[in-house]
Amino acid sequence: MTRAPLALAVLIGAIGLALLPLLAASYYASLMIPFFGYAIALLGFNLLFGYTGLLSFGHAMFLGFGAYGAAVLAGKLGITSFEIVLIAVMASTALVALPIGLFCVRYVGIFFGMLTLDVTGGDSGMRVPRMNILGLEFAQYNKIEFLAGPFYYYSLALLIIAAAVMWRIVHSPFGLHLKAARDNARKAEYLGVHVHRFRLAAFVISAAYGAAGGAILGFRVGLADPELVYWTQSGQLVFMAVLGGFSNFFGPIVGAFAFTLLQDQLQSLTQYWRFILGAVLAVIVIAFPEGLAGLAGSLRRTRAGKTA
Image (cartoon, rainbow, N blue to C red; front, side):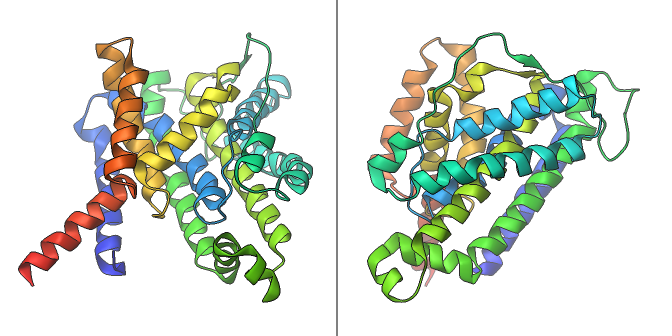
């Protein structure tokens, strides 16, 4: 997709999300908060998966760092500013990811995936208290009103900023080095690319994005839940990336949006919603290997070819 149609599609999507709280029930607006959290986490995940070629089976660990970090900072230390909490959990997660990445990025493929498979325990969780945003408490709003109003737009703004920063990263010389190492690591090393260093940097950035997404998820629920770091959550991130199309920059965001809506609707219809989601993924992988974003691009090219 060329820059002009892409920019138009992004603008339409952003306007649609901005109008959602005004046009739909507050339930659907609050439902988008997990989408924003997962979308931010997936921007980082796809830097590692789509652009570096490393598939992490334990990326939910970083969502957990974000959620539990927010619980400790706000609930135990009494920090009431979400901005301070967000910066703190991203920075601390990046520091934790550094030694993990130093070990893991020396391996690729299934070996990297198994090394990043997280192991967690405990079932009680930790409370994430309500914090102020931009220095404002919004005390006049109850929780649903706050999530569907101020925090909705706050999270949307965070997603836009995170996407803009990641766009700059992947289109920088750093991003080009990552893609070179992904396509042919040995040739990249011959050309002077420090493959392990670039992979490590991508791993740390990806972890920080995951922590930001986890903090949003924990804030929305009001609880840092152990299930957030369970291995199925890591598989869920992979699912969303593949569903949207990890070869497309906006594919994981599309995947997070589609997954959020599909999960919500299927859970209300059947207890076997995971089976149906798995079937949907199988169809996407077999019939549309570039995901939903790739399918949209293929339809556009087909339509353009017919009119040419």
